[in-house]
Image (cartoon, rainbow, N blue to C red):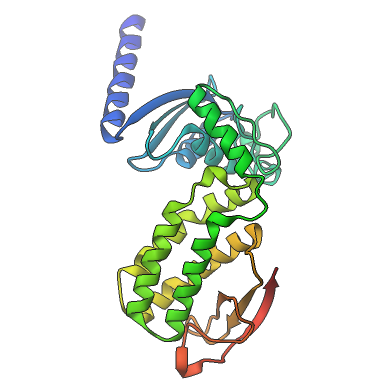
Length: 289
């Protein structure tokens, strides 16, 4: 009876694995250590690392082993393990930030093997020569003081802001499409770790807002998404820094009276939420150098 049950469980696992591989293109599967304790950990680890049609994670509570199936052309295990680390769970490659680990439920606070968080140190396990070359190049690029590959993202954001100042929906749509292209061109593996952490946090929101703005010429709808887009850009530029001074500005009348921020290369207020109707409404609340 026991053997029959084991055989049934193996068959179910194989069936699920086949189904997952069929849904994910260019599927590759790896099994890696991810530390945790309980069923709540399992849920959080699998949710953090999974992305529809791109990656799935199956974590075993007893062995602390995560079976990761992913589209090898769109992501890799490093990126998946970083997302899991940002949810509070260490692996042998990446260590969760201390504050995130400390905020886990008591039953989820597993015994930590290492004490250095992902923001400060990245441990890389090299499995092939290709990965070795890739990681070596990423380490060299990450030392570059200027985050030059993010400059097109910022410049396209400023172009979008200027278009909204003019209440030009067509121009804003074009700028948003160029912004989306520049976001998609960013190679996150070459970013410094602190910038990488923020990029992973905001990139999905950046893409969503840019897509919405690019898909319409309605300035009102564009401005709704420009509000959340600006919040993400602010988080990113605060960490990576721009090559020139940037002014974080605020209008208390925007967003239906709730207020909204934007970034500008000019100290002078030119309001993107109202344009010529209330061009000078707002103030500089922070200067980012």
